[in-house]
Length: 209
Image 1 (cartoon, rainbow, N blue to C red):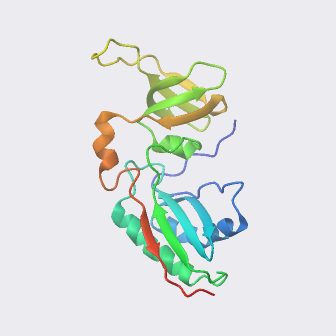
Image 2 (image 1 turned 180 degrees about the vertical axis):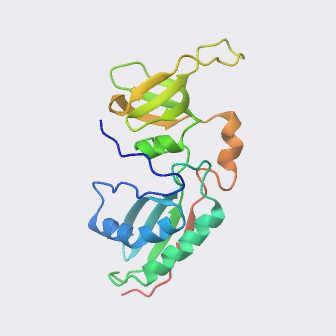
Image 3 (image 1 turned 45 degrees about the vertical axis):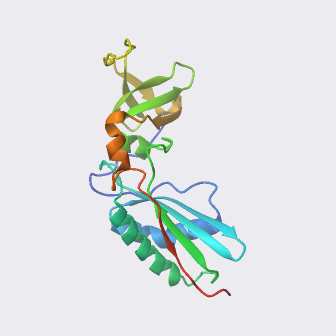
């Protein structure tokens, strides 16, 4: 399975467009992504939901592959203000009022792209393997074609598990993956600036057409 080359350190790259994204979501991605990239962030997702005469535009941003932690609440607020200005000035807008929601992914995000795995390096992950035993362990390496996980060996209750032999898993053999919550990372997950930062909503009271 051929995967894209690793990005240069410190340079955020464009996320792969979602294949089933609507035309409006794709158009908004093109409109908003340059602003997100200018802040050294990655535009993870764009979705538009309609309820009556209002729209909700949901934006998900993330840090580049080479950074750890999460997007801070201050950064979320700043990005929200900038994107709101772009949406206000959108020449192709249908003029319906909108609610803008900007957030960052939480640790429960499924690991579906190579960049997700790179962001999870050093974390405890659970990997659902096609045609083999599932693996839970420390994600130590991420390459173009797969990952390396060091599994925890079974241990008695109250005894810290010892690491086993590294297991190399090609991407084509991985059905799904996710980060496992650890007590040692709970403070990181709850603190501002950690993965799963709280959503920041910016409501525009535009006049209805």
